[in-house]
Image 1 (cartoon, rainbow, N blue to C red):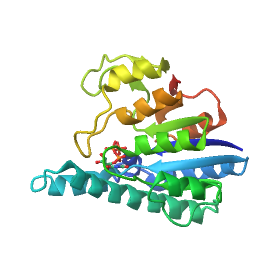
Image 2 (cartoon, rainbow, N blue to C red):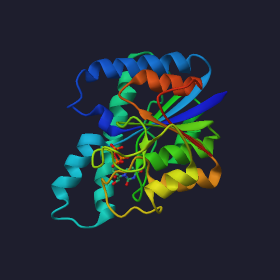
Image 3 (cartoon, rainbow, N blue to C red):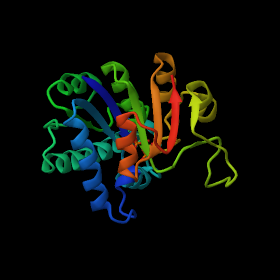
Length: 233
Ligand code: UTP
């Protein structure tokens, strides 16, 4: 059975996005149809607003990055629970509890066609968890569903002339995201550099796309052309 893993950016669930309910329905439809076609899908959900809110609340009084990471992890599991409940309602065969680590995730991945989880331990983001799950499970690719259309060589919000990529190598992506370090809780890059390093060492293909359009996730799962960036291993 073919498998793929998706890092579903927590920002996709945030309240500012209009028609979130429609997005939740769209993503359920996309995942349900693929899971019924003999595709096993792992989804690792990011922390989004609750992570930022919780981390910002205590950052002025707690400096320790690991403590802040624990708050972020709790938020990722809250968001994973939301996605799991929505999938269950949609009739998707999904795990009944949110696994706390990759070993637990791999164990239950075999029992359901769709696995939903959040973060695991301090020191990285859910991108890195998704990439590690994809490597451990021998998935064909890891989809990074975020809120930008492609990978850019610079932040397009800061430089409107930043160059975007349709196709690139993991080495090129590594040069953009920098060294595999986690120095700040709640700080976000297009793809977590710790995950990029793991993908590079294991030759795992990444697809970066704008997850606000659930159909793009469907196209990437189907192996079709999609608007976004293919990063080959
Ligand atoms: P996210 O995966 O949401 O990170 O985890 P992000 O890249 O900041 O957010 P999005 O994807 O753009 O919304 C939120 C925070 O939770 C902690 C980290 O502090 C991270 O920044 N975290 C998460 C961990 O420490 N370990 C994990 O496995 C996951």
